[in-house]
Amino acid sequence: MGYFCRVTDDPIGMGVRYQLCFALYSASRAVTDFYRPILDRVGLTYPQYLVLLVLWERPDEPVTVKELGATLRLDSGTLSPMLKRIEAAGLIRRERRASDERVVEIGLTGTGRELRAECAAIPMTVAGGLGISLDEYVQLHRTLEKITTTINGTKE
Amino acid sequence: MGYFCRVTDDPIGMGVRYQLCFALYSASRAVTDFYRPILDRVGLTYPQYLVLLVLWERPDEPVTVKELGATLRLDSGTLSPMLKRIEAAGLIRRERRASDERVVEIGLTGTGRELRAECAAIPMTVAGGLGISLDEYVQLHRTLEKITTTINGTKE
DNA sequence: CCGATTTCAGTTGTGCACAACTGAATTGTG
DNA sequence: CACAATTCAGTTGTGCACAACTGAAATCGG
Figure 1: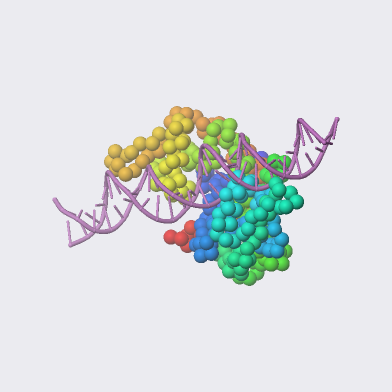
Figure 2: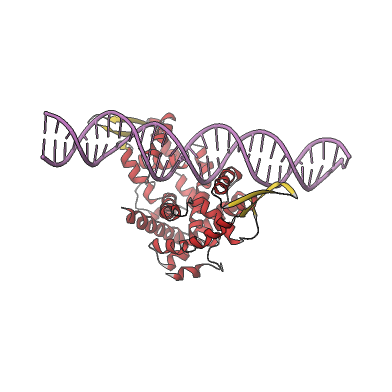
C-alpha cells in the first residue's frame, strides 16, 4: 500500500498540491466556478441545477424528496430548504401525496419544464471547456464512479 | 465537440448520473465523508486539515493569509473565520506583520506541529480506501489537475 | 385494534464557499 | 509631499452540506 507515495515528488509525502484529495476538492470547486456564470443566466445554482437534471429525466411524473435524496445523495436537511427556494423561483411544485401524507412529491411547473431547452447545451459547453480529451473524460468518469461506489458502499 | 455525448447511454444526454459534473461533485463529497471519521479523531474538518497540510510543509516559517488563499484557492471570506476556529482550537497563531500591518501571518503552535505526526498515516489510509489501482490513482490526479488548471487559467 | 417502531420531511445549529463590501495600511504618481 | 489607487484581511449575507433532532403519519406485532 506504501507505493502510493511514489505518486508525489514531495519528500515528506504530505504536500497539499500532491494529494489526490486536494486535486479532487479543487477540481470540484473549479468546475462549479465554470458552471456559475452559465447557470447565473438561468438563475440557478449548481446544486439546484442538479435537482432539475433529475426532474427533467421524467418531466411528467413527480419525484419524491426521498428519491431525489437517494439519487443526489443529499438528505432532507439539505434538500428541504433548497426545494423551497426552487419552488419560490417558480420552477417546481411541492405537494404531499394524498395516499401517504409523509411523502412530498416534487413536480415541474410549466416554467420548470421550459427551462430544460435553455439548458440543453450546457453539458456539452462544459465538457468542451475542461481542456481534456474524450479518452481522459471517459476514464475520469469511470474512476470517479468507482471511488464513489467504493466509499458509499462501505458505509452501508 | 458533440462526441462527448457518446460517453453516456442516456437517450436525452442529460441524465444526472451520466454527467461528469455530477460524478465529480459526488466523488468529492464521498471522499470528504471518508475523511470525516478519521479527522474527527483529531478534531479537524476537511478544509481545516487542508490548511494544516499547507502549514506543515514549512512548519517553522509563518504563511500569510494571502499565500494560503493562493495555494488553496480560497478567499479571505472563507479563510478568516476558518483560521479563527483553528486558532481557537490552539493549533495556530495569527499575528500582523510588523513591517506591513495589512498582512496577517499564520504560524503553527507547538500543538499544531505535534498534530502532524498523528496525521502522517492519513494520506495512505485514504489512498488505500478508494478502491482504485495505482495507475488509476495517478491518471486521475493528472486529469483533475489538468481540468483545474484549464478552468483557473481561463479565468485570469 | 392498539401501542411500539419505523418512515418521512422538516428544523436547528455549525462550518464551509463565495460575492460584495469595508476599512486600514501601503504604494504609486504628479 | 499629497492624494489617488491598490493591497490586504475582515465582515455581511446567501446558499449549500451535514449532524442531530422533531413531529406527524404509516406500518408492524401482539
